[in-house]
Length: 397
View 1: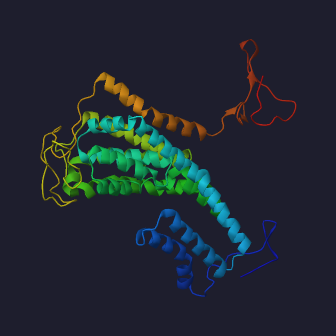
View 2: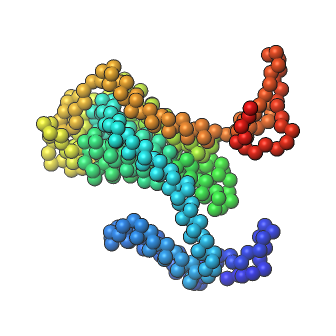
View 3: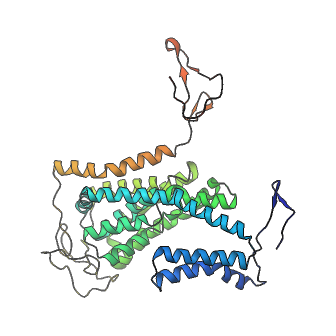
């Protein structure tokens, strides 16, 4: 370990990290992984509460960093405090508001309207999973991330009649495609802050790799539900859903930025799949009794079917109620209710997009909140400048 007298970027460093303090790459790697292993063990096997498991992981991380890697105690404590603050703002704040918006739609009954709108679009379980778990989940991942897409999409799928285990599993599978650009690009921005590599560079490279994953994940989702035979009958919807998201993911990350990749891709995927399903429906309506919880009064679509097997079709005609929830056709009043139910999510999209817009330029001058210009008698506009510095937020009279 090197201490004292080290200059980096004009600053004196008290400590720099040695990546192999134990003289063995395997042992040093195992020591570095110990906090994560303890955290996951406490959650999965010991079934501790999340905050207790997190505290165990923190104590283990402090012990390893100080005792094995030689990090100064004061620096380790400051790093822990900084990490906690960064976890609360912006990560905790983003999650808090996403959960608040979800709870608001549930309390006002609008979440049930959302479920009905998805169910009326298609009674096929595979289409519902694509729309909710993949497309809507990608949008929620972009707006909030950190587990909220799985929680919200699972609740929506359960409301549509999916069993809780399948709802959670499908939501987790679908969440693998958009997670790199989740929470308004937080993973990319954090990696850029840690490595010093520009976020745009990281985003461009991620945006060139992930579209292939975005094409595979929707197909994987359907195969998990209904096997390869089930995929063959809905491959056009899979291509529209995953292809639209992949194209937007590539284009937005390479030419616009990293913050809104998932939001733009999710909205585009929702819109494309919705329009496509208005003119196309699969020839067979698929409903597996192991996937969909039977509603009172409905007929069981099949028995003894292994989840993920190729015998996952009911052979029922479109719109039948075998093994699935039945939705009636929407009236004009119902259409207005659906539009109203989607309004909070539309407002969320607009707010996030506007907040992350790059500053505009007027006559070569970049705006920092506002640029004033005067156009006497309709002539050429002239920029208005202040004689002295004015702090941001000052009211213009």
